[in-house]
Length: 243
Image 1: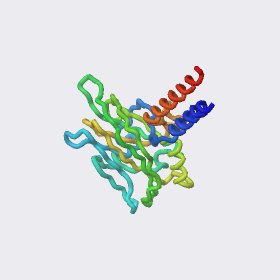
Image 2: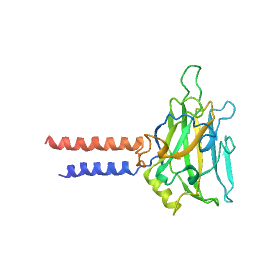
Image 3: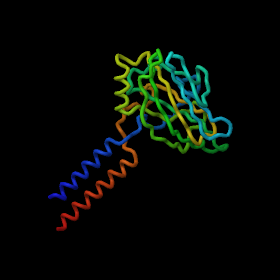
Image 4: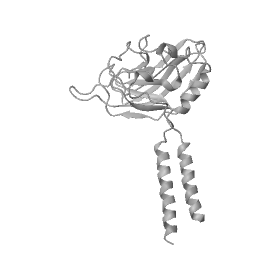
């Protein structure tokens, strides 16, 4: 009886640890093959390109404490390339409907597939018009894309806030998101082409990827912990049943 209780306690503890583990706040939802989404055609927030022969790039756009737009890193500037966007201007009425699309331009050999790229950091920042930062998305799990869609405007890899972060942003905005502004911080590795763009849109504009806010996704370490806990519990139960 004691061993049975220990076994089930082990299962409960393992499930609890897996459920509370760190997870990606901006979660990858899938690939959208959208045409005509190049610079200037959509609500581009951030455009960056690796300098010279370097293979990594990073950039950010946001507001300073005076409400003035500031950029940093390997950023291509210009109102159609890098610009904070208000929720009302992009038609996003709730945090759960926000979608961020990553369009990588990594040309491969002539006639062959486009090259890979790894998105190693991605953080969504939200500011009031006066420059107060009211929200920053949490831990991001890097994503490696083995092949990218060729050409600027072929779009992209779609991300959305998980359920907890969407609720946090909605609460931080108070009565509404309308005039609040979207900023972004990003870093990519194995970047040999460019430019890479990020644009924001409503979930309604992405058929097939407009589902409800996603929940927490256990990291690989959490899944391994869950598996080992279940194996241990199963072994205890089997040994007891043989007696």
